[in-house]
Amino acid sequence: MSTKNSAAPAPASTSDREILISRVFDAPRELVWKAWTDPKQLAQWWGPQGFTNPVCELDPRPGGAILVHMRAPNGVVYPMKGVFQEVASPERLVFLCGALDEAGELLFEVLTTVIFAEQASETKLTMRARVVKSTPAAAVHIAGMEIGWTQSLERLAALVAGA
Amino acid sequence: MADSLSSTLAALADSTRRAILARLSLRSLSVTELAEPFAMSLPAVSKHLKVLERAGLITRGHEAQWRPCRLHAGPLKEVADWVEEYRRFWSESFDRLDDYLRELQSKEKKNVHKK
Image 1 (cartoon, chains in turn yellow, cyan):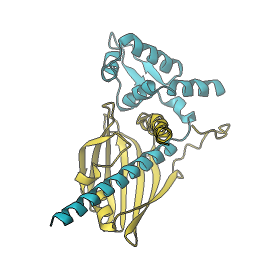
Image 2: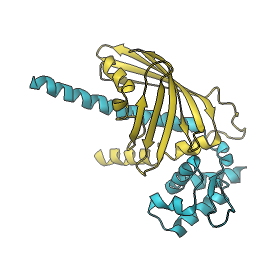
Image 3: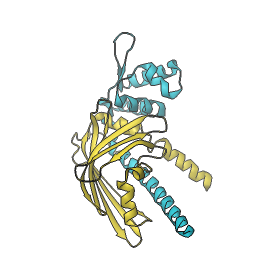
Image 4: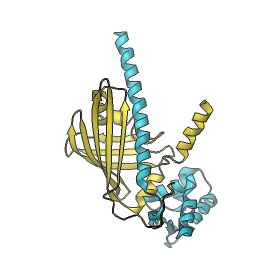
């Protein structure tokens, strides 16, 4: 939990909420690109530890649909839906994606840009994700996925045990 | 304000309660429906629901016996930004992608050797 000074309420606006993550993968760019755009492959890694993706449909072209049903280890299914905006193989992927409630309403929506940069035999991924829509229920939806709560504790425990 | 925030955080400090809220973010559910995936007794679930209700995170309907539980996400506005949690979502996905790519390449190497 953040210990930020919360005296002033956070602005309701979501336009400036953005995350930036980059990571270097020890794999050629073509392979990383395929892992992102082939639904069978994406289903293998999308989501937090222990999640599976019983439904994973991708149509990687501008305007093409994304539908992923993530299944948590406790059995709860989190549907996500989106649309590709830019698909420039094997360099750049832009998609709008969000979580749905059972009425099909978006709990949040995020515009994600992924850049695939070749670095010798490795690939550097840079992801920029900007929140374009957020509802108060989004927080609990994400918190319920148990990312960074028990799992980081578990991983820490495993690290300590392995030391 | 501080008190309501601490009761929100206390309510969220339990993984079962977070899982209950996560399910309620999808739709309203009865106590029986909520108890199902947790292998928990109804009284145990009711206890968690009381904590969540006191923290103002859920409301209970009055419709006959069904009394559906609904998420009331208002207090969550005070809770730290979910975007940080979303960052962890991706950080974990990237860990898995890393593992997946390694696995894929070690399989490819084996296949090359076979040929």
